[in-house]
Length: 451
Image 1: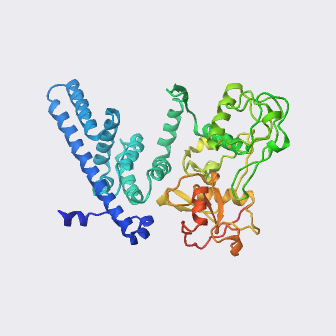
Image 2: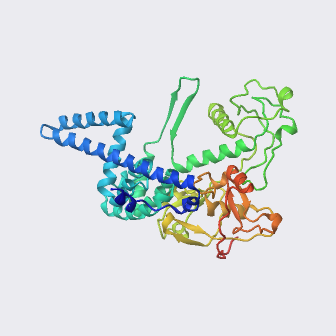
Image 3: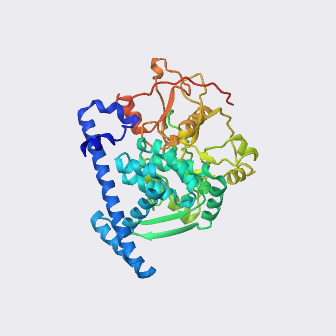
């Protein structure tokens, strides 16, 4: 038995391989593999029990069979120590994966991937579960990349990959999903409430970018509904030259109630106090204020929606979907062409040479060069497109919210080029600066024209 387990032991992912020289980490990896294998055995056993109960009851009638399945789920939920709803989802997704994606199921039972990745995949393939031809293709591709990705990375990969399997099916699903848009408010027990909205992705992305840009421009408390602007010091913003998209704020030009927390704020009394709120708190306060009174800043807010699209899609020769710069969302070609043709929008076009990256279900954007220390907007945007997210392994913080770091420091003759710059979130930027994050081996850049 032990020989069989040793033979089926999954391959160590590339990002983990270098850590195996540490005995404690190697032992932890082996423990993790065994834990995932045991979890898979438990899921398989509960799935067999669920199917056994269903088969026993099918001799009676459909209603009895349904009740028997629900009772089996109840029993499984006790074993799993989770709700019946969650247990039902797990068993349903496990059955779907087992019956339609044998390669991935083999990874699951061998301990190469965990239960969370199983559920992520099971949920993602629902729209194509009746397309065995597409599932066969996806099974091969996802089995190659899943062991080396976090669940969040896998989810983003699936968002990019599945639409390419059948573009027309994807466009039809998007058109149908838009019909289900809604807004809901759910009140909690601790004095806060949850607001949810299901919106078309371009609209949601525009809202998110505007909130982030406005919140980043605030480092001081501002008044509520007062025609007296804050003192000049209150409009100053500390910016990091290497942190992208942090516009400088200016005093409001009209009555504003943009601050849900500072009700009754006196600008003459408190205008010189630093705004101690976190970025997330600022975004929440702005969101509430904008919805309550419809007011926004009286100054322009620089908020970009970065989208990558093949030229053939833009001209109508292809319907390959557009991809958000952080690779977390996909936009159907017809929807992108509507945005591109909007006369009210201010577009900034960038031309970039690319090469297909089938493994990651995207295109690699290649390098550009700039002389000087600080990246200009064009180079910064190009790196945001290229990297998408923080380049620390496993991190999914958007490149737009990250710093642009010189891999070889500027003080050590490091060039301000796309090949020497990479996006790092502030957390991983600090790790790299203190020697805890390894800089990747530089690849030979492929030159390309860039405006």
